[in-house]
Image (cartoon, rainbow, N blue to C red; front, side, top):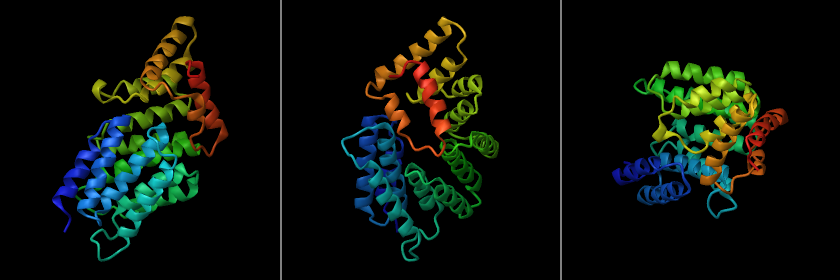
Length: 266
């Protein structure tokens, strides 16, 4: 039986803010959860995502954040295949492994893992929520794969399936709109996120979108002012780091970097 303390530490870890300090606290809490219950599969899966965040944002001291994410996701998958551990065919293991896989630039395998995970969702009480959240997350992979139109539709369908969806659905949808050239829609979508829930990264989407539609100096200055706000919070983030993200489409990478550059990111 899963330790209640392991569940509680994992719950607290999930609540940490998307900041360097929040990420470190999430690591600490997930380690405690695993110490409490070495077979608690959700802790391994969610801990892998904490390392992905570190990889994506360049946080922390580790040079092997993606490797740590892979190790933990693989452990989650291993537990989900063991009939004796209580997590047999739990969809979350493959879902989190799919996140790691596209960060390793293997989009075909990642999209298959998402679909395989989706097929394992079975709890009728949570099927709409779980399906919607998995699909919205898969949409992010599709954006980097180079299919923003499919990503947009996937998120819109997920929102309809689960009206109580979390804020990050809007974040991913906005990025899809940007990549599809729907810049004002991207700006409007970010505005739907409550102010206290907006992570710093959404400023990148808005600034890049405003820069792309700017027809006057004042409009471009608005984009650059927003980018300055982002950089004041994340002073080490650069165009080069943005370009280092895995893309299956060089044109999609260029499109994103072009907007960031126009908005003033160095």
